[in-house]
Length: 53
Image (cartoon, rainbow, N blue to C red; front, side, top):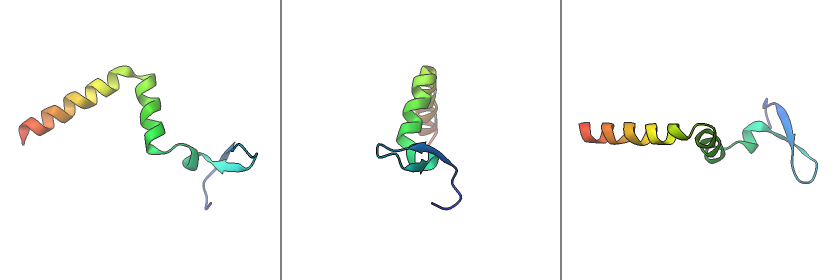
C-alpha cells in the first residue's frame, strides 16, 4: 500500500487506506452533498468556458 495512511476497515475487518476508499466519484458525491451550490457553480463555469471557445 505504499505510504498511504491506514484509516478504515473493510467488510472483512482488514485495514485499508483512505486513498483506496475515497475515489474521485465518492469525493465528488460528498462535495456535492455538502455544498449543493458547488454543482451549479461548476456547471456555470463549464458553460462559460465552452462559450468562450
